[in-house]
Image (cartoon, rainbow, N blue to C red):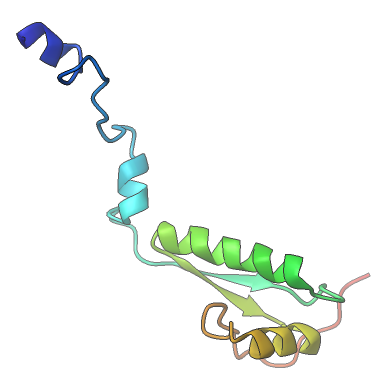
Amino acid sequence: MAEEAQAGLRRGGRPDHRPPADGRAAARSGSYAHPRTTVLCDVRALKAPGTTTVEALLRLQLTARRLGHGIRLRHVPEALRTVLTVTGLTEALPVDRARKAPPIPP
């Protein structure tokens, strides 16, 4: 019985599922000692945002939140602002209240 415990086996011979010891569990739980960080995501180059664009931004936000952080959209074009408002995602993808976006460099 002691040998089974050392081998990481539970009753029935199935492997014991322990959390990974390399920090992945700490990253998922957000228990790192780093302060919460908000990343500004410049989206002024988006010409015609659609559902794929919004899905990608939501996935970025989800990943950031899982790691204990977040993103804010900066220089949001009116088309994307409208999509976020119509779909009710303005709280899920917060917009940075910065001054008017400068033109895109050539």
